[in-house]
Amino acid sequence: MDLSLIQKDILVALISLYHQHSHPIKGEEIAEVIRRNPGTVRNQMQALKTIGLVDGIPGPKGGYNPTERAYRELNLELSGGEYDVPISRDGEVVVGVNVVEVAFTTLCHPDVCHASVRVMGSLRGFEIGDNLTIGPTPVNRLLIRGEVYGKDEVSRSLLISTYEMISLPKKQIRYYMSSPLLTLRKHDTLADAASLFSRHHIHGAPVMEGDDLAGIVTMSDIAKAIGEGKPLTKHVSSVMTTDVEKAPSTIYLFEVIRRFKERKIGRLVVMDGDRPVGILTQSDIIRQFPSL
Image (cartoon, rainbow, N blue to C red; front, side):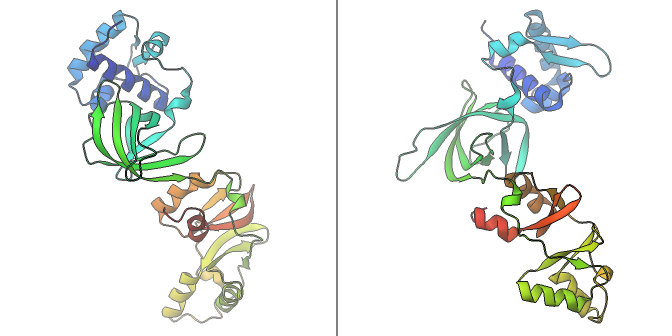
């Protein structure tokens, strides 16, 4: 069947939001994504419902669900794998829009590298000159950064001039962490910590209480304590941070990068169950992809 552009906009926004939230989607949510009047969306929804592309769910928590026929109409698979590739503008993930396909159109050109990025969701929020980050992609963990120079509403594609492509390391953080783990005990002094840092050329260490992780002390903590006039005989427990950033050893490196940026941390403790087994620092990450 021949759908209008607005009907296609509504369907792809509905499918995208449905896969993100796994519950019926209200017309107002779709209208916000595609930047249309909610009344217009409701009217179109009635038409889409009549031809069997959406189901209406009544009640306060109701809304609309896409039907299997809607997926077929848009040549989409029911598998959710296609909807896991995010697109960000100026560091912020664009809600309701996901990348379906990236096709490089001038990969062998010596001066430029253009790509056509087909998305599921509305193109209305994108402008010429927007700086975008696409990915990571699910198989090769590729990050693509580029600038929008055009839009193709018919094929639902953004045309970008790429200026950076990064293949993120695919191994778990246990392969990149510093180990064996060097630790301090709660009753160790600031002098003990400073000596440990100097001998091993490190800038921080977890503080243990028996077999349990109690906190973490860094060189900055020691410098601050000295600046406040605290003696080096003070126990590290008096200056340590108890809210320790932790991550399981089995998580992938690319998954923790955002945490370093958002929480402005320099390190996190790598855990194997309840047992700390290593430390991952910003330096460990930079060694893997210095362009980040």
